[in-house]
Amino acid sequence: MAVGAIIIAAMLIILSRGARYGGEAVIYLNGEEYARMPLDRADTLKIEQDGEKINLIESDGRGNVRMHSSTCKNQLCVEQGWLGADAQSDNGRWIVCLPNGVSITVSGDENENE
Image 1: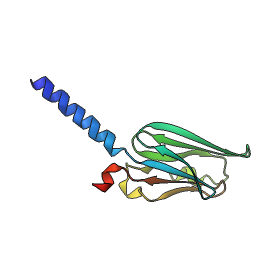
Image 2: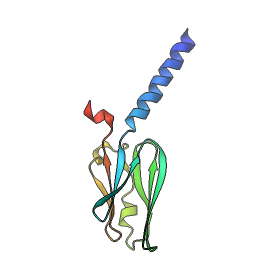
Image 3: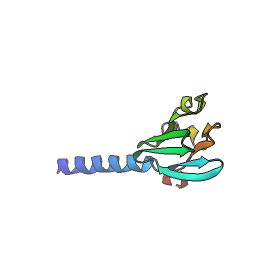
């Protein structure tokens, strides 16, 4: 009986954590929406333009996204670090790579509407 309660409690914790990491990263290229990345799974997105401008965007599966690398000279977009669930105040902010015309923002998860 107690083992069943522990298993149910563990499942509820896992499910609630999964819900916390909802939402998605919205990626723009030259001001137009380019892609969306769910933030509940680890993934990478490579944006390549003219074979020269390359940006690699990474999500960690825990509600966060960052510009992992870029071919821009100043690397400010890479230095901006992670954006997302670990710093709730970051929602609505941007990661921007001006030289390559790539930007990222985080849209909220299902829990924001509760």
